[in-house]
Length: 533
Image (cartoon, rainbow, N blue to C red; front, side, top):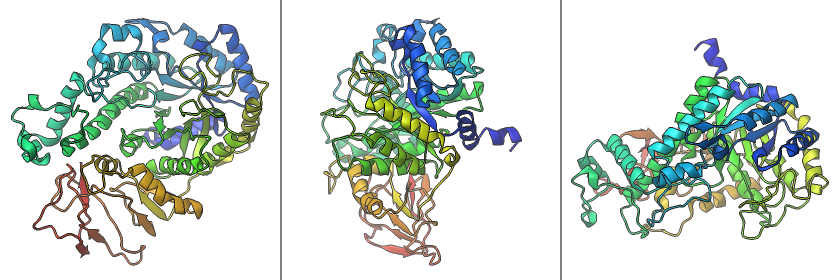
């Protein structure tokens, strides 16, 4: 590895980020396009007062940056980036493709995702795209190229933020086509697909690839292997789009971090696979202020973010200062609660405290979602708390980059999550995330650090491994295996074991079968059981 390659690793990119910022990243989403130009100067003045050193720009700005097909207007973005840099504030610049503009949807109506019941997710929200649509992909990558070219050398640019909360699942014709291509790459032949999906059950045998499509039906009694593969395809296809944008931006700025933002307990994307492709795990976290135990679920998600990249510090990309508009009853956080939640994240490995958003919106869906500056302006309890926290965080610059690890491992695996909740199983009422939380809670109460792992992780460093509803494991006949190593006792005993119980499933969701399967058998000294995908 060359010296240049060594300095272009995720760890080095994050280290340089925090050196540029002077410590912990502090700030949040900023949407200057929502406000008159005269407000911008006031915003920057207040940001300096609050100790803000990083803001996220352009998350929802596609329609302002590309006003018609191929017609770009970066003037306003140039101006605000110049203003921020002149005042010592860095920019986390977003590619805005979470919100395809109205002109693009009008030109390509089938860019809108088709829901499982066959209805169309219409324009007027966000994430209104089918990631497999060729026009969406071409236009979003073109925007990433334009932004990479234009801002690579801008002194305010500190980090890239790709899309926003990836998540739309489509069952339309473009997803059908991409799903078939994904299956052809995975299985190679229809014969292998039919075998893996057990299509002789209920006479579902496919004789031509054109017959294979997305499992877009509202009823749950359908082929579980098909639906499980669609979960995998959905995560993989969105990740492929993220990687395509990341690679464009990386070509222009190899020294800057590139991330996207994750969500708490989010089922559609396998964050183990995603985190491996990012410079840092970044989380949007919105505990319900009404729930007395919300901090426990938050702690679980914080430990998961820390674990996704093997203990590397992670980023709080979004949280609320006060009211959180997504809940059914929109109450504000009590005094001190925002500060407490921020320090909880830092204690569990976060190197940033960012909010959505800087200035509370006057209209739109999130008009009641709090900001660092709320509707009442800066002379409020909330803004005073924001300023106080900003002052405190400046004194904690030395903790950036530090790590912690535990001796307890808890398995959190998206394959298991997807498979467990397909239904038509011995327990179809289990909620995987809640089961993990139930088993995490005793360690939280005992102040015991928990590392999360997946079923491919090396567990030799742990004294205790907890496997909550670890439903999808393979027997030794599974194709394309991936490793699962378990130890019967802490290292020192070194006694591997493999339990081939009735809950172990083939990676396509099939039961192992009998014979030769013998439920409950423990093989001492056997090779590790492995999972395929």
